Image (cartoon, helix red, strand yellow):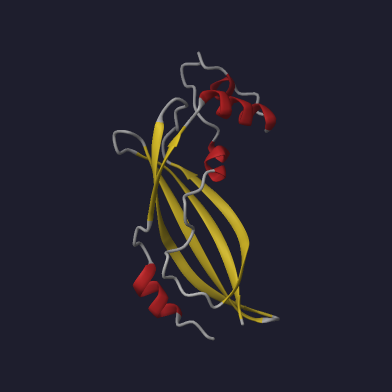
Length: 144
């Protein structure tokens, strides 16, 4: 089945389909930083004046769904990478709201045929609604 990419983009891009809250447990973010080999005090020391979650920690968080419930299944999906965009520091001890939408859908043609890439974006907001970060998860689907 050849998916109509323009139709998918029109129907699904930038339409929120999931929301979830995340508590930024300081003990967990410190341990994550330590295990990653981080040495900067702002990620390891609760008393540091700029204590914050390591930016890559955001990529470990996920919503309940990665695609809208009615998104068509037209092939086998595989992980195609992750990306994090930090807009403001994420503070341990805070609760974030994550909202997911499809940010992009595009194709590439490879040796085995057309591949469809879907970028699911999880946007993170603090208790005051300040946009803190984006976490993009790319999937590649090789059409049947």
